[in-house]
Image (tube, rainbow, N blue to C red; front, top):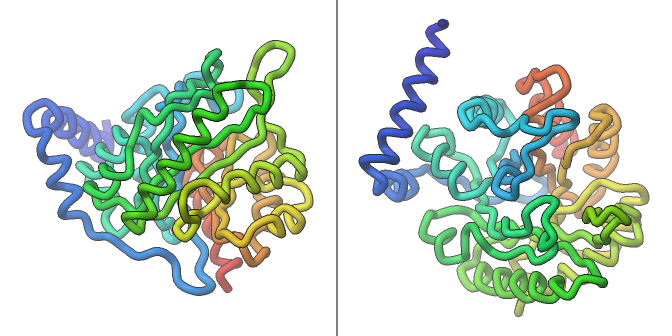
Amino acid sequence: MSDTTLSRSADYERLTRIRATQPEEIAASAARRQRRGLPGEGERLLIIAADHAARGALGVRDRPLAMAGRADLLDRLRLALSRPGVDGILASPDILEDLLLLGALEGKLAFGSMNRGGLQGSVFEVDDRFTGFDAASIDAMRLDGGKMLCRIDPSDHATVSTLESCAHAVTELARRRLLAMVEPFWSLRSESGALRNDLSPDAVIRAISVAQALGVTSAYTWLKIPAVAEMERVMAATTLPALLLGGDPPDIDAAYAGWHRALSLPGVRGLVVGRALLYPPDDDVATAVDGAAALVREARA
């Protein structure tokens, strides 16, 4: 066993020990954490996403349980966060707390994932309840904002509950001057009953139009949207800042090309990517992250 493996093993043993005997250290670590500000004029962000597991979404491409090993996931996240050009992370409470205790969030932006109740593949998937962070806990943990998934299925009565909950979260974050990152999709059920997001330009525009009006103010609202066809027309639907999501693309080269094209648009402020960078086809996390960072740097220039 290598020295690096031994060191990381000791890190995770310490992490489990702190959780069992000193749970108050999580809040103390949050209070001590060195923060950084949001981007200035012309800057773009690269944020690593790691909130999939909390919704039961553990698969990457043909690996249904790729994200099931917590130590392996944390190894990948720590490596990604250590790479030049990575600005921060979006994650569920458990993962953010692990990274806090490991000291991996110093000088990084940190966004808390708020609604993870719409479990992948469930009959209640559209009823995406807020089972993670709320605005008060995001503020108390000194995080930089909260992210919410907002899937809109006109044929599902549960959609209105999700819309109302997202609007409330946007309002409560804005009252604290914290960023609300809203991820909207126009969604529908397939014949098999699976919930699918409509990624046509018209559907993305429709979803954006609903999402940007949630809450009593949009002053602190950012959008998290896919890079789809006709992005110029899509971005013309909003004046809000937008970050491009990564998803689980079957063709990573095509995904990079799509991000590159969209990053040139004025309203696009960067990338929020998880599985595509953390679990690339060749498992070379550093190279995948560096490639995404290069795209963002080029857009900053």
